[in-house]
Length: 236
Image (cartoon, rainbow, N blue to C red; front, side, top):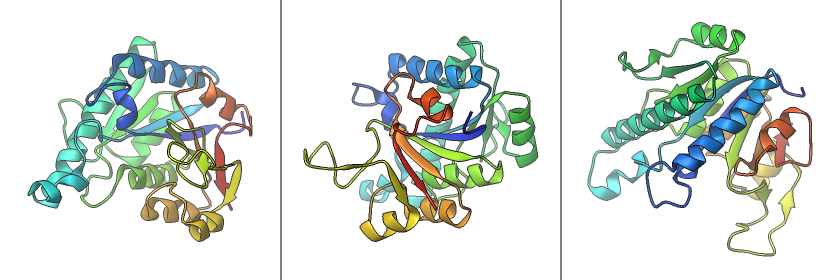
């Protein structure tokens, strides 16, 4: 495999499938099947999933709520999604552990770096819930931070588009897909890959990012096997 230990970042919105909110069971099962395929190859897999299909903390102020309170609500939404993914993975026969950035001892282990790495070494899929446990940080930032902490080889950002484009491909049919970009290219062209905190963390730690279409069957395994045609690679 080209990448032995990966951090897979999934958006909460992706779990909605064709629904307007919540979790689409078919999409959840599909993701579990894709992750199982990667695990069967021998990859060590950590997952961070957003909560936008349930609640987005950044919307709190526009709703008249306190931003900090809203962010904690968003963290709880990520735990719900993480629990759903954990259940789907275990039905696929995959051993998992859910580690949370905030203490919810009835359903999650607390996040401890050494414990997380030990789980990975034992070939358990590790799911990181509740972001980093602090407000004002997105799940993109949590994914980058956890990837650096567990010494992942790459951050794989699974989306509904097949890479990074010069413009929004859903709005501009003339948008061009990039196969490879440097971190500096992304800065100079102001491309929307991750929020700036998350992106800078990857850049400073020389941690490559691959943005790819998670909804296409087999893409995750193709990346692990070194297929450079899948998605867009951002590296130094």
